[in-house]
Length: 261
Image (tube, rainbow, N blue to C red; front, side, top):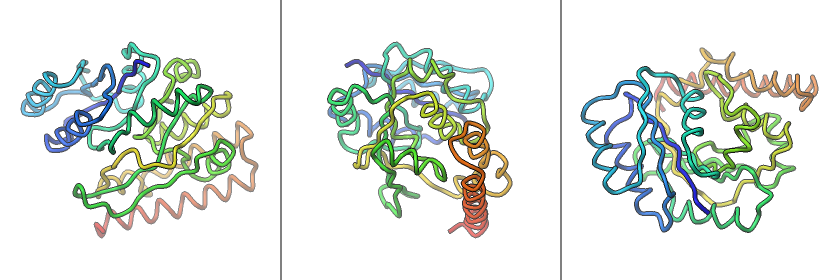
């Protein structure tokens, strides 16, 4: 099975993040056949130089955008540049767990009916000091129930059938929560989703992670619930529960970003 890895980098990413990410990819037992790296707008010369160095050790194909276009645009653009049907996702500040790619390829070979495969994550502020994790349900029926109130997948861990994703329109053009909206559309359109029970990715979480999910962006964070209500995935009572859960979470994130816990 030939695979691609889709990544993006922008000006706020650091050399330390990029090197940590690429080292974790380089140390894998199986490495994707190509790495599509979208440079989302102008970046610092030092970061560009470091990317060129990594192109010597990894099969990286870089594509530059003249201005910062945002994650949804970048991922849809990048998917169309991937030459293989199956695509891994992660962010440039994430770190692959040991044998991440091997485990997911093996699972898809054994379960060819699955269209999107994810897994669990551990979080860090300073690698490798992990302070929490995010466990998501594995089986399809549990994922559908969980989705009514929370994002049922960890986006940096996913491995998906590119053509199935493009057939349903790709990532919705939203400011936040593009992945949550995509999983909703995928399930509504009959795609099969599964999560392994293993930790596949280590994800960086910092003050900015909380500020993006704070009250200032609540209208974007609550949109998935209205989409599910319009699509008849949830009823009105479930909509109210979902909105109250999200309001509580956004309030918590705002407090975390203010006091920098």
